[in-house]
Image (cartoon, rainbow, N blue to C red; front, side, top):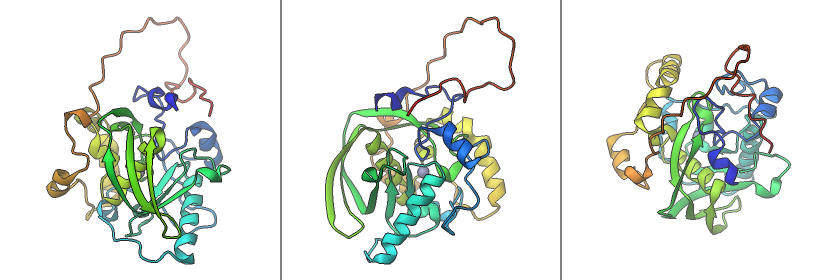
Length: 272
Ligand SMILES: [Zn+2]
């Protein structure tokens, strides 16, 4: 898990996006995803599609789940399936256009690890650690790779929620799972990962956001309202903002013939 934090310090390297499993290269091949973190247009075994910013539903604060019936459970398992196909580790209701407070996740991103699958309904994060960690996040709802950036999150959280049967759960989460939970929880509060970016990171992804805005046309909801911003939990204070990036030390250039592209995706050969 340690590795997750520092894997991709540079924005030029592939972001291990929150909604993107660590095995990016493998998944890219499997799903032939286009550069920039584009989602498949059609998923197998499902008619769900993944919503993209600035679709208004992504800014909704959603209604509670009330019926823990077969229909709900089957929708959750369909979302889990879609999440894997999109190479994700979490998927929130708003991301499939549903106005209810629930999400699914599997921090391993591995569909064979059913034991890590979690269905979360009507959640509440009632304690955030002061201790924070900063890591790269991307989101399936905004071209996960192109709009990846650093987000500072609590290292651990105490949460309560209902599972797929409506049973009440209370847990302390830490590490990557805590980060996934915080990202997904933000979704059902209408908050997106880049709302928590530093100004610099936000400016860097702005051209992609502008492209998405143009693709969407009029009627999108672009930013958090002032009201929501003021109510943001935890508040976006200085300690919750990603630290400024140190200017990289100039590298000694190796004499090697130039190859096509910057080759950022191939360099690491990260193992799972
Ligand atoms: Zn997301």
